[in-house]
Every structure is written in structure tokens, then in C-alpha cells.
Length: 302
Image (cartoon, rainbow, N blue to C red; front, side, top):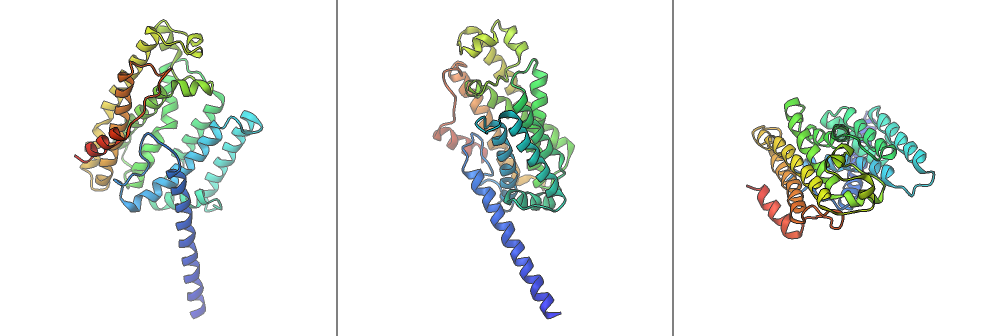
């Protein structure tokens, strides 16, 4: 009996060390990538940050598979890598994980009672990025957002013990608006990858064309188009703002509220930057300055 107890203690210690090193691995990935919007900032409780890092690392790697056009084998190989990632995700839910990202993710989904669907939705969006580069309607873009962005907000809420559909509804608004903001900010960046998220129906509505966009022609029609997209994105942000109040008034999510406000302010600041440059995103990429970050941080505290 004494030897068994000792062995159990060693196994527990080794497992704890494995989890700690795996979470640290995910944290290094998260902190090694530049983001406009904070990833697990200091406003989050320390005991929750590791879970956010794990989910971020899982999504970051998958996003890299979808985006890395230099991968030998082209689109088929990128899709195959995403399929392998999806299988590792399923294995993780069945208690089989060997990659540090999935070891940390496995502990995360176990501790936070997270279902597999949000992560599978993310992988579905990444696969879509490999095979789809044009969108006919705004509804198509919104459908993409339901899988590329909205699962992230839901996952963060679940990390804080919230599985409430009412919370998810407003979280989806903020996440969709963040994704759209990123699209409008990165029109020129995405063009270099031969991706256009501006809906064709809107392009035509404003008397512009794919041909002009591909040639990066900045004119009044293009700027009117971008103004239209930015303004309706702001409206979606405004719809989602209620989540900040809801999380502040909930015992489980109270500590998340300031992080949400920080994220909301970050997204709406980018939209304001679009307006400052008169929506000339083909020649300038609006970014948040150090002063803006300080102002946003201070704004999130009150």
C-alpha cells in the first residue's frame, strides 16, 4: 500500500508538470503573435488566462495552416493538415493527447465543461478560407463570422462558467463586429492573398468592381463602400455592448466584464481610425498607437 501511494503521488506530480509545461507552451505562442485586440490581458484573472492561451494556441496553429500559402502541396495539403488537426481535437476529447497544445486544451475543456462544437466550427471556417476567396452577399460573410469569430467569444464565456444562450447572443454580436472590422482594416492585406471579404452585392451597389479592387483603385465609390461597411459594423458593435453590462452583473463573469470592454473599445477604435483616414484602406492600414492602447486600457477600467 505504501509503494502504491508513492507511485500515485509521482504520477500526479508528473501530470501536473506536464499540464504546466503545456500551458506555458501555449502562452508563449499567444504572446509571440501581434494582435490588435488583447489576448488574455492582465485584466483577466490569472487562473483563467492559461485556458484562454490554450484555446488561442489551438486556433492560431489552425489559422496558420489555412493561411500559409507556401506549404508544399498547396490547398490539398493545407486541407489535409486541418483534417489532421481536427482528428487531434477529437482524440483530445477522448483522452488521447500528445501535442502540448492538445494536452493544455484537453485540460481546458475538462475543467471548463466545453463541448467540441465551437472548436470544430473554427476549423470549418479555416477550411473555408482555403477554398473560398469571394463572397456574393453580406449574409455569406456573416455565416463565415458565425464560425470564424463567434465561437471564440462563446469559448471565453464558458471558461468563466457561463453557458447562457442570452450571453452568447450578445457575445456573437461583438465577435462578428470584430471579425468584420478586421476585414475592413485588412482589405489590402487580404488582396495580397487573393481574398476579398467585401460582398460583391455591396461592391456593385456603390458602382465599384472586383477589377478596380484588384487593381487597388482608390476613389469616391470605394470610400463610400468602406464607409457603409464601417457604419453597419459599428451598429453591430452597439448591439453587442449589452454584454458588458450583463457580465458585470453576473457573479461568474464579473471579472470578464473589463476585458470585454477593452475588446469592444479596441474594435470601435479601429473603426474610428478608418474614418480618420477617410476609408483609404488600400493605401493605409489603420492601427492602434501606443497612446490609443493606453486610452483604451484606461477607458476599460471605468
